[in-house]
Length: 282
Image (cartoon, rainbow, N blue to C red; front, side, top):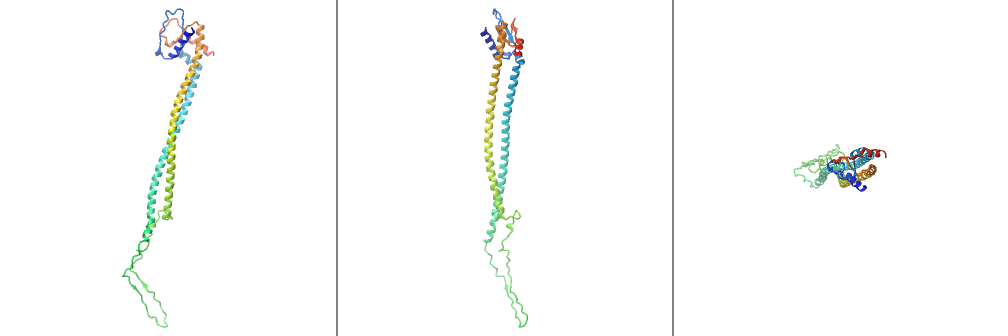
């Protein structure tokens, strides 16, 4: 009888709560075999350990969901940081390009005075007349020294170095000082660009690792939850099986089946309430 009861109970576990898997058990010709049935939906709904197990499951599932959400948030933060770095790198490159143009212009300006000073001095024109006047100084009279007057027709503009090209863009700074400052800024920008590009590569690698971590952790969580549910279900079913077995023996019942899966039967005994009473009394 115990073997027969165990087979029937296994049918309960396999059939579960679905009404689509109903079976028909003919009761005629069974002789002295008695049949009992149990409303498992009602038992699962009112059995305190089942409610507790359900709450524990939901709590664990929510905790794991929060952990996954934390990893996802980390990925979002890193992605945002990468976007900022890309923007900064772009701006630095644009600034560096503009500074290089300015550096080239300053370099040309520094070379202009050298070119002008290397130009030959133009010859004095033959039309330039030099006149010297001298006078007789009478004895005893005051003498006046006439300084020879020198006049040239050519001006000095052609041999003077124009300072127009040396006018600085920044008052108080020479072209050389400006050049050095621009060059220093370019070097600093290029250093920042290199550092930020390295940081960007590292952050993108970290994103890949975090995404893999998220995927692996999600799979592990799903597996852990299924295992937890399975173990809890087996433990609860073990308790129910023991109570149903003891009650069936006391009531001289040979077969116990799930109530919602009975198509037809006569003389069956409903054990649901008696099982609930025993479960509550535990």
